[in-house]
Image (cartoon, rainbow over the protein chains, first blue to last red):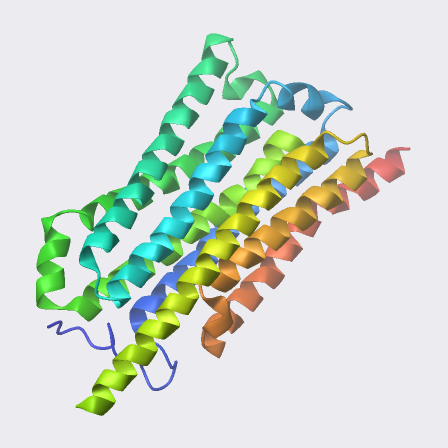
Length: 200
Length: 107
């Protein structure tokens, strides 16, 4: 169906298709993007006056963040289940699991909205302290990644996916596998953000 | 034709096995999340709390990478890309520690 070479078929030199190689290189660049900010966090924490990070960290809601962690973990398992459903030729189940993934992602954003607005109502902004500066930067960048991922997931929930499934089932399964890798990475970032920002 | 059918059945069995693994990993991740939160209430020093939190997060991250992202079954090219990135990432994490020498000099 596609004229672009090695979208689905394996390249002999890399042993995989270009879609997969491309997303892994993208994920590597994302690790360095978040790595730079994690490094900034370590630097700010070392340089902060004693007790400063503990004081500002105590203003965050651990139950809300725990709930968000569980939401992202759930969305990760439903994401991989949607791919498995396609592999088993169960398109209805694929839609169901993808729908749950989208709902979990949206719920994460709603919780984050309440967290952010809660801070703003108490007069806490990124400019309030270095801790809040790095907190809003790290979580804000993560939220942008969630929004980006959701846009792709919603696309694969529309009629476009139905059409793709009718025309080329392998292609849709491949697209979902690649999207899934990105989504799991976003979950992975949160797995580290959660203890560093909320629990330490 | 029957050979094709057999391959398809084996493939379906393989995926079914994967699904069981996904569910188990999900349960493990949920339990480890609760453990991380519970441990944060323990009366330990910052260094101890830091190592516990990072260890649990690393275990959770490894589970996601290994099973949800199928890293265990990936080609060497992917492993090399990630290994190189991890080296660069770790260097980035240790760079801020240089500032500790400034603090030591100040003391």
